[in-house]
Length: 252
Length: 313
Image (cartoon, rainbow over all chains, first blue to last red; front, side, top):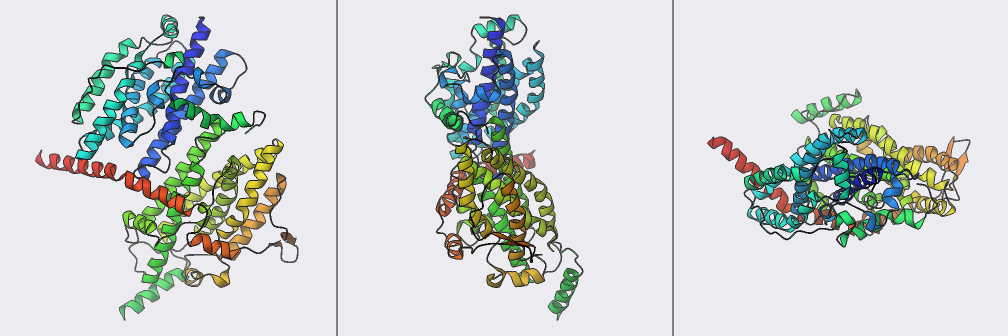
């Protein structure tokens, strides 16, 4: 694998994580518990999809085959998407969405802080811009973890169930492959193993403060680094790509 | 009598084109009319998020998706300002939402029509937001201060929406034959319901009289509808779409377009609940409200615990 191929693949991973989580959050439109939350969740969707545009645009540039960010989003099949399984999981109830966001934003906060120092200037620039948004997403998710965990008995139960259900998708966030090896050597990205202890510490603190329990199950899902996803991704892709696929010669 | 003197002062203010503010005395009918109108407006913004929301996950490009998401957010934001304006009249957001759920309060009938294709998303921006702007520009001069100021803010954003919708329609109308067909079909279905947005003809409008006298409304339904038609017909011509009204023609003498008959039976039917999506829109709103109850309760319980802790500390 060349450095260029690794960088292309890495950008797809970052871009797909943003795009697919943005897609999931956008599904909350007109479904949230109060309008303020409707706006908050779809605003995060807007941030994430905006970020995916910047990253996929760069991916297309790195690939050098004349594709655009839209080609990468709308014409790639499901086996060529590299987002983590966590972000494609269905919204579930509000607690599932918050826990998913909490795990992911805590991870993104640590990752993008490192990417700000990347030797790849484009990625460093995107990271610098996006870190402010991630801080807000993390604060939002953390505030809700506290409210749900330490709110009513029902919200406590729901939050704990969501933690337990999402737990098996957390190890994969830190999985690395040849892409990471190459880019770590180039100073473009960071060793994800180095983020893990910090991630665990941060989420443990919030979970405990929320009066919830850190799950202990050791079974972990994997697959996305090879483009092997849960069954849910196919539906997201089918919905998202439908117009571009149905009218391949049309411009929108 | 005290009331008569107050009414006199109130009417003097209205006649002098001063704004009425929340703490000013106002006739009960004025307050009622405003609550009805502003809450209907707020509910329309909020329910109006649903039809277009259908297409967020299917928007055909990333740019289109971002624009649509931002637009729907703007609408939610407008709903919030308007609920706040309405709350200055002494009613809470919970009560307003309760009135929406029990059918006492209405929202614009246009949102009871389905948004079936991507062209419908364009047509909504172009026509529905276009119609809303005509109405809202006029309402910037409404006599109630908080409503007037909300309109000034909202109008700025609505004009973006109208342009973005027109841009979608333009791309489709000038695109492949299938895209053009999609655009024409959307115009055919949404044109007449858009004209109904302005409400019944002046002669048949139950609420126009006092609303005009008190300057809540500044122009009549027919005047606003005519202004909308006159500006929109040309826009359709530019992108090569045909208005679905064979009687539509320029009347040089009156300097305006004459148009065919609006089907007021359909309007009444849809206002009274029998439109294609009335049930779906309300069911969605109720479902989100009910499913969100435990979240709102959790937030309230948590906030109460925080207050208690502060007191103890």
